[in-house]
Length: 113
Length: 113
Figure (cartoon, rainbow over the protein chains, first blue to last red):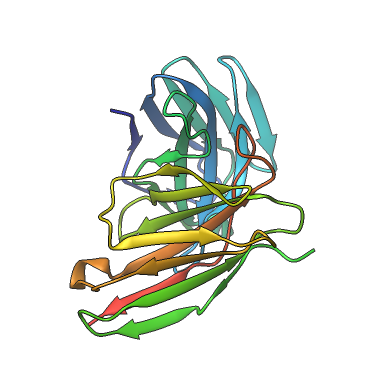
């Protein structure tokens, strides 16, 4: 069974204090590792897609990396507006439904001013 | 360009009733997926439709059904509502059925009382 596990569940940072969020996955036929940001009561906002081990993508203060078993979302010098829940999802091609995303439970990030 | 739009945004229903949720995908996107997100958890896959055909179904009871129309919009129907059906229902659209990013709407918050 496909599994995506995110850690930590919650993270509190001071403004400017860099850190990383972890996403480990067990998917038999990985077809993309996706990162989303979700604000309370809103739908997830797409951030990145990673397809192969060693791939990296950056957007402002965020950088996502991928290995064969995990992905990391690095946050450099975060600001209070980066506070949100960050969701990781794996796309599974082997299920026959390649748009089926298996989500982790998310990391709730709070950045204090 | 308009993003994914869902209606209604909020809904309160009584146990045993039926509900219909609607989704309009991004223009040009042919794939629509539905997800259920319970508070504190990541979204869970319900259905995927591509070119008006069901391409995938998650582990949900037969009370849940969906369809996609010729204009690629979609409906999610839930019969015989239970208290446990209370959740944020998310619609995601993607350009193709496989290997492309999924963009989410703002969701429909369903409360069953």
